[in-house]
Length: 243
Image 1 (cartoon, rainbow, N blue to C red):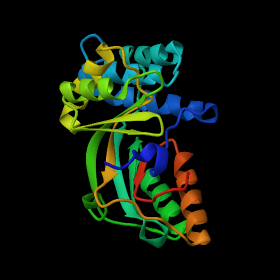
Image 2 (cartoon, rainbow, N blue to C red):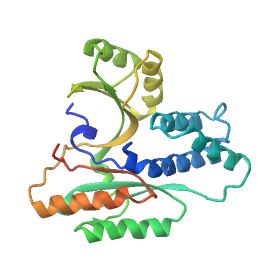
Image 3 (cartoon, rainbow, N blue to C red):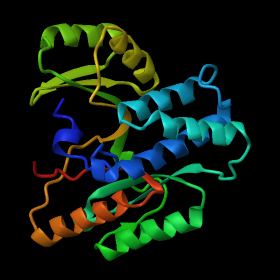
Image 4 (cartoon, rainbow, N blue to C red):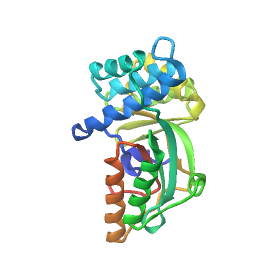
C-alpha cells in the first residue's frame, strides 16, 4: 500500500497546530454533543463519548473544556441540535472532494460549501457523485522512532489490522472500519501511542497530481476556506499534494 495520505496526499482539516486550537475545541464539543444525545453524558456508560474524549485529550483539548461540555449537557442547558452530513463535489481540474460536516444549520452549511466550490473553479455535486471513488478505512499512525518495525507490524496484524506500511519514519496501520476501535485499543494496551487515529476516506484509484499553477492555487485556497469553517470536520480528496 502506498504511503498514507496525511504525510503525502490528503489535506485534512483538523491538525493540532496552535493557530487552530479554537476550532479543535469546537470540533470535539460538537462530536461530544452527538454522542451524548445518542448515549447519555456519562463516559463510563457511553463508550462512544469516552472515545471522543480520549481523542480530544490526545489533541491537547484542556480538561476544563471537556468538563464544561459535559456539564452543559448534563444540566440540560444545551439547545443545539447537531447532525452529520457529507457534501460531495469536484474541485479544480476534476479533483474529487468529500466535505464532512457537523452542523446545527444545514442551510447555512450547504450555502458555505457551495460558495467554496464555485469560487475556486469547482462544483458541488449530488450525493454519491464522488463517494464511490473512496473507501472507508481505519488509519492509525505511529511514530516509528525507537520502535522495531517488524515487532510493531506483528502486533498490528495480530490485533486484526488489514495492512501495515512503514514510510518516512512513520508506521501506518490500516483496519476495516468495524475493526478500528478493537485494533486501536489492542495496540494502545501494548504501550503504543498514535500520531493520528481516525476512520478516513481513502481514494480507491490513487491520487491526481496537479501541474497547472492556477489549479494548485485554487485548490489550496478552497481547502483553506473549508479549514476555517467550524461546521466542517474533515475534507477528503484525491489530490496528491507536494510535500
